[in-house]
Image 1: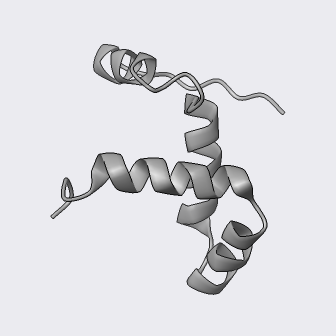
Image 2: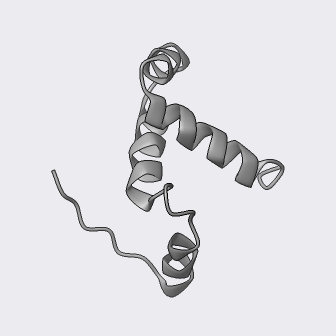
Image 3: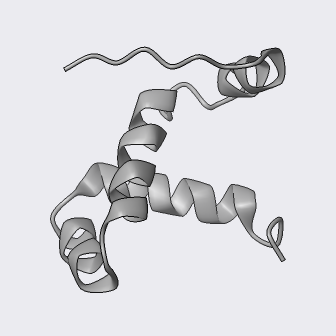
Length: 68
């Protein structure tokens, strides 16, 4: 399934700064699941999904302390 997302210039530039293996679509897929599941379902999803584990690790590293 494909979707179109509209970004402003700042977001578009930030998207281009992702490491090569960490595409915007990978991050978006995992963020959508994280935002729409409860803790139990999230942990279950995380256990069975290597991509989600990689994205979680990447986001923890990049976002640690930015939302305090």
